[in-house]
View 1 (cartoon, rainbow, N blue to C red):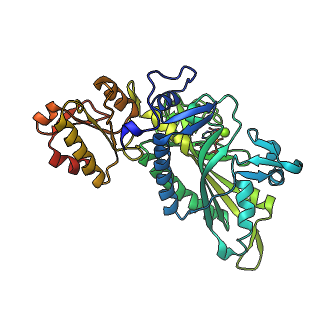
View 2 (view 1 turned 30 degrees about the horizontal axis):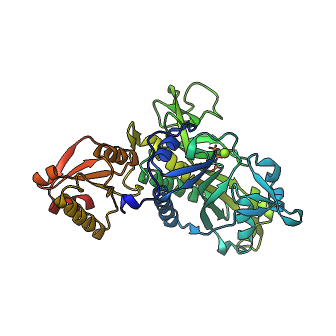
View 3 (view 1 turned 180 degrees about the horizontal axis):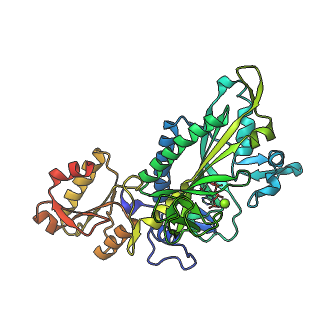
Amino acid sequence: MYQSTLFSKTKKETPPDEVSLNAQLLLQAGYVDKLVAGVYSYLPLGLKVLNNIQEIVRAEMNKIGGQEILMPALSPKANWQKTGRWEGFDVLFKLKGSGDKEYALGASHEEVVTPLVDKYVNSYRDLPVSLYQIQTKFRDEPRPKSGLLRGREFSMKDLYSFHRDQADLDKYYEKFIAAYKNIFSRCGLDAKLVKSGGGTFSKFSDEFQVFTPHGEDIVFSCSKCDLHQNKEIFAGDKCPNCQGKLEENKAIEVGNIFKLGSKYAKDFGLTYTDEKGQEQDVVMGCYGIGISRLMGAIVEVHHDEAGIIWPASITPFKVHLIPIGADKNDEVKSETDKLYKALQAKNIGVLYDDRLDMGVGQKLADADLLGMPVRLIISAKTLENGGCEVKRRDSDKVEIMPFDKLVEHLEK
Ligand code: ATP
Ligand code: MG
């Protein structure tokens, strides 16, 4: 893509009213725009990142048998009354429609997916089933000030699994832990499995937490064994496993998985007929990942004083191609054009800084702020030295590489 045509522009300064690091960098670089607190637009580069994260999540959910659906964001009050969450879900957005009908904006989808599954599942042969969606969720969070980490409107992947019994749920749940670990490491994050108190209707849950100084959660980690527990439930000063010393870490919860049991199945009469012809309650699990929170978490972890450093798996473009002096030197211009075409032909995503009215300092500062993993510079000097300057965003090392080796090198 030609940078001169990019809709969004970088800003000279960080937005004064934004306190969170992820939002400061993403706003300054033009990845997102803030409408009001907790509500953001995703601009062209930001949407590419969000889509890349979604594709990783989709691939891992499909691998363990998840089937993608899309449920409505609007759901009737009656469904939420059945589960006790019209009053019990403290951050639920409620609205009035015509004829005094009342609705909730989807904050979570047990109230929609359970009656949906009831329409298709009758016999033990119909189970297990695993349904997920990637959708905008709405929660009226009080004072959201953590940027993408806590939105009032945000992107979530939520999956719901339905089983004959607890043993079948337990087996599937273990597969999830492995799939979630894959997702977070593919996104460049080291997420720890953390034991926690459950949500509205379950006793315990497993959270996936990324340790960073700006996290909203506090996790106790054992210095000896691999035990991590959320501070919210934990009482005591030693590891309950091995009596080791506990360390306190700030962390971001990027995912959360629950065994729901038959709570929602009972609310909606979701049963199945077993092998003996007996009617049984379906057993459920639910599994969430904050897609947009993940984008914020990646920025919190991968940045330096100059800007963002995207992991290659989710970056909007792999390469930032920057000619220097192309307005005065035809060879610089033609070699850069040639390389741009060669990279595109190999399907290597490239942002071409073709802005002629922009000084070198500003171009390089923009490249650091935007954070593409590889920067390529072509100037009269690099051509004299036989090629183009290659620099990784996460390293200070620069090297000159001949054009014929470059494309192959980048493909790796
Ligand atoms: P938190 O304790 O941070 O409020 P939660 O326990 O309410 O999270 P869940 O209801 O389990 O979260 O939602 C699943 C996932 O969605 C969370 O693990 C988190 O990654 C993400 N998430 C939850 N609330 C928000 C929000 N307001 N903005 C962005 N992502 C969110
Ligand atoms: Mg919450």
